Structures are given as C-alpha cells and as structure tokens.
Image (cartoon, rainbow, N blue to C red; front, side, top):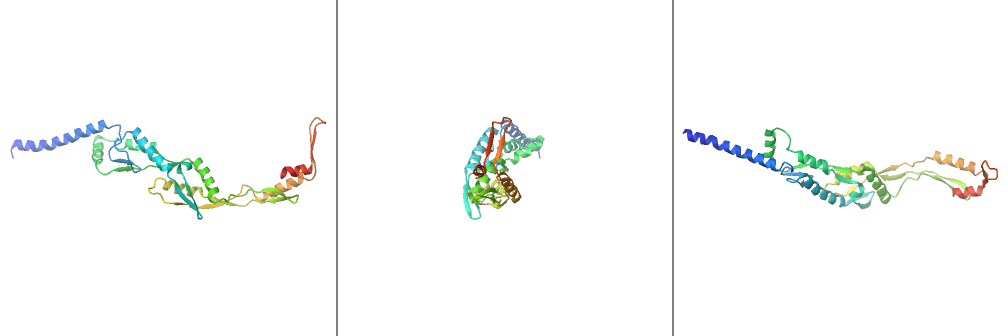
Length: 250
C-alpha cells in the first residue's frame, strides 16, 4: 500500500467525522431555542417547535380534552359531564420546560450522542393531568345531587297538631370524591375514553339525635309561657306570647 493511499484512507473517515461534527454544531446552534426533533408531549408532536409555539399547540390539545364529555354512571344512573367543569387540565408549562431542556445539558460528547439518537424513534414526554380541587369538589357535590339525590338530613324541630315534634337526622349517600378524582384524571388523556363507573358512600349528617333532643328541650322551655323583653327604659317593654313563639318555629 502506497503512502498516498494510506493517507487517503485515513483522511476519508476523518473528513466524514469533521463533516458530521460541523453539521452537529450548526444544527444545535441554529435550533438552540427549539425542542429537539422527534419529540412529543403526551402524544402531541412538538419536535422543532419553540417553547411559545409548543405551549400554543398543547393549549389547543387541552381545550379539546377539556371540552370532550365523560360518560359517568353510579348505581345504574348515568350522565355526561364536561371535564373543564371539574377543574381538569394538563400541566403544559412543566412539560414544555422538560422538552426544551431535553438533550441540552451535559458534555459535548454526551450532547453529540443524544443528537445522533434524535434521528431515531420519537421520544414522548409524559403530560401530567392536574386538577383544581375546589372546583372538583363543588362539581362532584352537584353531580351527587343529580345522580343520587340522597343527601343526608341534618334534622330539625317541627309541630304536629300544635305539639313539638323532633325530626331526627338520617344518613345519605354521596359520590366517593377520591374514587372519582382517580378515575377522571386517569381517563382525561385517554383516547378513546372509557365510560367511568363511579362509586358512592354513606354521608353522615352534621347533627345527631342528641342535638335534636336538646333542641326540643330548649324549645319546650321557651314555649312554656310568654317571654317579656325589657330595656332600661321602663316604657319600652315587649312581650312575645306562646302562640307568637310557635308561629316563629313553624
């Protein structure tokens, strides 16, 4: 083998390496503010987009998810609900930040290896589902009224044939908030979505029989005769009769 041939054989791979290195430097510098190619977030292609453009694309994706109804049921009763009404959304900002940072840190050799890998299969970044818990709780309570219509009764005091009568508290049934949250967040990004079977649980009233019994005793005391209200001015006196007190209770 001649020296010229040997030199040529050495120079060819060296030139190819320099060419690839040059392409790497130009490509990474020209697209430094973009998400690397072959990247998706939650299944949405964002490769080559700037952060601002990726956020806009994912916002459109979120709007679609939030407007697509869930089919829900409990104990045979069914309804359709809008996810946005339950405070569901996706964590766009953190996902885009992760995509921008991907393959942007490390030594030049590490970055070069990742750059080569970006020409392969698409890498997907997880898109987390988030929820506004205050909105979720309010909407689930309203959904309980629609699907179950069995809220707990806190009790009270009434009159039957002119006599005080206790109305004792009773338990009710409401939707299981923790179960509903887990199932709705799990299905929010699913394509296609499956119907959600919710569960319910017993809800205790705020008052007990002891509270009502104590209220009855106090009411009986107040209704045992007229009540006179006096002020420091002896001319200003108010007397409330038993019948007037009963009217106030009813």
